Image (cartoon, helix red, strand yellow):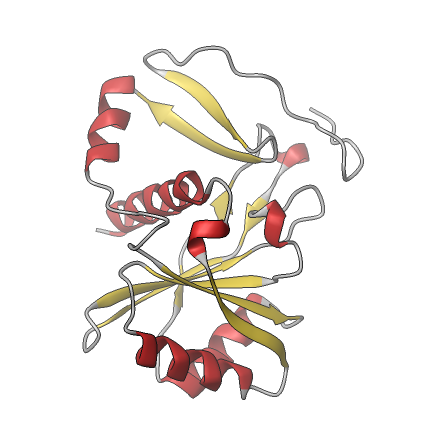
Length: 196
């Protein structure tokens, strides 16, 4: 399936989801998640998710032109994290020619008892979160951080020389965030399962 120019829709409309099918879910007309499986198993996975755009997640936006592996190294140094790369988030509508992948790294902080993800926002044919197109990466804490902790982390990120901007984002104002967080967590679950 050939790609169209940036800014135009290149995705087919989805009318149904049946067992054992290759389904693509349209989110905000630009975000897709490809999943192979049964509807029953998908529903079971959804029940395990605890994401909430209101109070369940801390989201920090980072503007930085570094490659994901260089940024993760800088974050590991500044925050004493241990980010590791897992398979990229693939939101392709199908086929290698239409590949839409976003870098994805994760780290579980034993002291904060929180799971952090570093996810890229940019792809030439679509943003992960279109309403925040000025953001290059998102640092996501699965569970809400205390205000003082979030401020310290954000300040340390800003102190990285190559970072132009780092700011905590009001999740309640981000459209379709619940759906996007669900996609990210499903991807993380599947990746962890594959490494078990």
